[in-house]
Amino acid sequence: MKKTYSIFIIALVLYLSVINCTTAYAQVLGNSFYNSIPVEKAVNEVYLNSIQCKSLYNQDDNVLEVFSHNTQKLYITEADIQLMAKLVYAESIGEPYEGKVAVASVVLNRTINPKFPNTIKDVILQKNAFSCVKNGDIKATPNQACYDAVYDAIKGADPTNEALFFYNPSTATCAWMHQTEKQDMTTIGHHTFFKIKS
Image 1 (cartoon, rainbow, N blue to C red):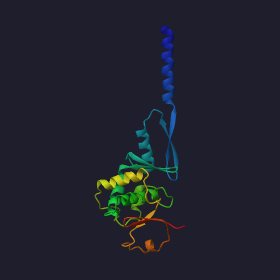
Image 2: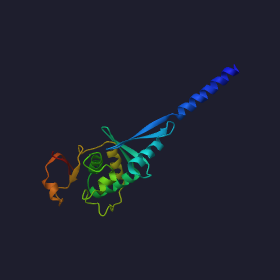
Image 3: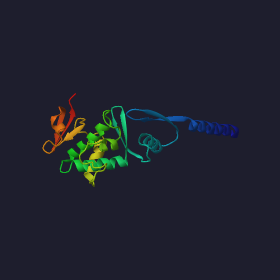
Image 4: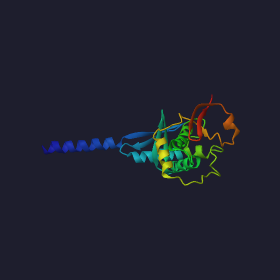
C-alpha cells in the first residue's frame, strides 16, 4: 500500500510540474498589430495586464479598465482616465451628466477608429482636436461626475450613437464645424455630436 501511495504521489508531482511548465500565450490586441507573448500558465491576470500595457504604451502604468467594442479592445491606464476626466471637465462645464458621458464616448470612439490615433493620450493631444488642450496640457481639476462619466463611457454607455465629433453650434468659431456635412447628429445639452457624412 505504501509503495502504491508513493508511486501515486510521485506521479502527481511530475504531472503538476509538467502542467506548470507548459507555455501559454497571451495575445495583445491593438488596432494594427497582434503580439504573442510567452508566459507561464500559472501567471495571474494582473501580470498579463501589465505585459499588455507595456506592449501597447511602452510605459509601466497598470491597466485599470478594458474598453471592448466589437472585436477591438482598448487597455486603459490610470493616466488615460485622469486625462479623459480633465478633458470631460474642460469640454463639458455646465453640461448635463449625459453630455459628460458623451464627451468621453467621443474620445473612445476616436481611439478605436482607424482614422485617428490609437491611444487615448494621442487622441486627446492631437493638434486642434479639442479647444481646451493648450501646449499639450489641459488646465482643469475634474470633479467626481467627470470620473463617473469616463467610467460609464468605458463600460459602454454611449449616448452619441458612436459620434466622432462634437461642437457647440452657438459658440464654435471653427468654420469647418459649421460647414461640414453631418450624419447621425445628436444634441445633448449645448453640444451637437455627429459623424462626418461619407
